[in-house]
Image (cartoon, rainbow, N blue to C red):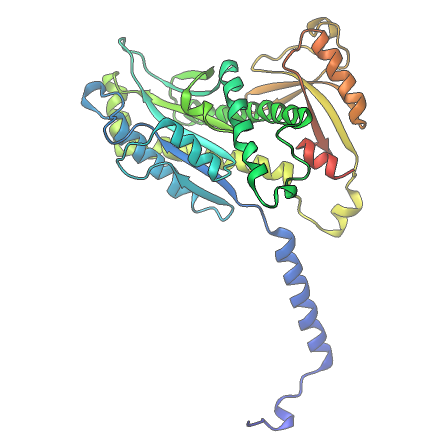
Length: 364
């Protein structure tokens, strides 16, 4: 082995110290800023032997696929988003299989893309989330999906989840409510981009019982890009210009939604943030989510006092009964349901940011 003369390898001790220090903090910075990968499943409606609607000679399956692929390509530019397609070519996929693909991928979001049709000259874009009836079926699927945990050799890693336990089922019910809440949020972002950026007619965010949404166990939306049966809108949907504008709007909405998730789950760690951050957990009861801005007077909420209104996108969320103690929150939930808010549920916050109930319990 050959060695260089000593005078050529002399390095000041001070320089070595700063080099080591730099490497240490660079490594720490990478570890602290490491982020979760968010999985987005994009579902192009119809396909293969199922053309979808064929208004004015256009094929829904082709337009939905082109838009879905374009959305995926834009999302794949983000380091923290993984994209899964239910189909990326002209093939037929069963409705149940589309949901199963999302469930198996443990997706954070499911987006199904379609084009509408009507016997009239209707036009405009709309976004749908799962309706109440569908949520009941959705919960049953969640139970079935989770029941296989007991077949796994190391199912204890699921932190006490027991599909035969009433408490676990209540947890799943709360998860379904949270999923609906998140579905409404991403739907409002998509719809806002369609109407404000692209000046499309607003057919609103609506709830309906779509089969493909019932098969998923995560926040999910179904987008109707517009009506192929409307001659002018059909041409727009079938054009490269229209498809690019629509896919960009959807991708921007999804990125905004993912960023919102990161705000609630990922923190940038530094000394100042650690010193100023409170570890206090607060539980609240979400009693309503609406586009209507309702004065928070007790007479508007069946006598419930100190109701809080928070704007999220184009929606308003209404909370009641803030407490740092979960047992007190459960009592507040019982009162809210007694007052008629049957779908009310408990949510958790840390330093004013929404977190999951499981996270809140793990922080205690």
